[in-house]
Every structure is written in structure tokens, then in C-alpha cells.
Length: 194
Image 1: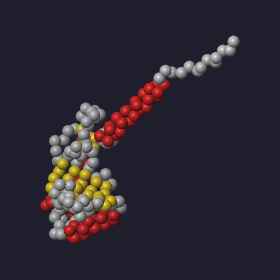
Image 2 (image 1 turned 30 degrees about the vertical axis):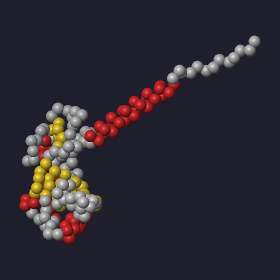
Image 3 (image 1 turned 90 degrees about the vertical axis):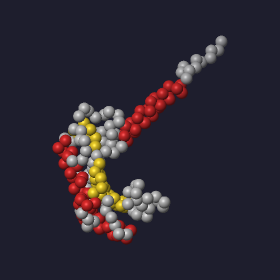
């Protein structure tokens, strides 16, 4: 009598058991990626209210210096002071009680007699920033048909992590100089710029 060798035991449905961990891993990774993009400053240090006010002053002072490099009066060209940015919010509730996020920025609206005068101002500002050892990046001009088309820009980040830029405004196309202090977590709830 011949006997048939026993076949090795196997699971009835091996594929789903392999897919579940992969699906869970993908879903978990997607949540982490979304959280990382929406909570960019969640892991940053929390400034005291005094430190944050100092950061606000540094942000404005950096922009004022850049306006002076253009040969203009910062007080005469200041356009707007802002503390908010839609990307700088604690939408997931990660910050503890008493901690808030703000993004201090100041915008100036310098006027130039012609596109050539604007280009000359860009060159002066680029040279001033480079002389301070700052890395200057080019900002491409808006496409044809867009506000400010044909006017390129420049930007840099100073030693206090303030991003400075001179470029056409997204909406009007007019040149704007902006000092952006970045998304900062701090103690207290400031009602506005001080």
C-alpha cells in the first residue's frame, strides 16, 4: 500500500494577512506626512512672550534695513503688519494650553520709476545682502499674463531666521519688500502687532 505524502499546511487566505500590515503602514505614513506639513513648527522651541516680542522687533528691523538699502524711508513705504498665515495654525491641537502660533511679517511698498529702476534696486539689495554673507536666491518672474510678469525678485534669510524678499506682489504685481519672521510657537495670545 502506498501512502501519499502529507501536504504542507497553508493558510486558506494568505494574501489578506500580508496586505493588512502594508495598508496600516501606508495609512500611518500618510497621517504623519499630513501632520508634518500642517504642523511645521510643532516640534520647535516655544518662545516666551518677551522673546517673541523681540523676534517681532527683529523681523521689522530686518525689513527696515532692506528698505534703507533701496534708498527709501521705511516709515513712508510701510504697507502692512501681519501676525497670521493660514499655514501657521494648530489645526490638530498639538500645542499645550497657553501656547499659540503666529507668523510676524511686515510688508513695504517701494515705488520705482521704471522696470530699469526696479532692476537697479534688485542689484543694490543683492550686493548689500551678499556683503553681509547672506545667500541670495533668485525668484522667477511671474508668467506672462500674470500680475508683475517680467519682474523677477530675490530673497534671503538673515541670521535671525527672518526671510527677506523683494518681488512682485501676487495680486497687484507691484513690487513689495517683505520681512517674514516664520511660524513661531510662543506663550501668550497677542492680539496684533506691537
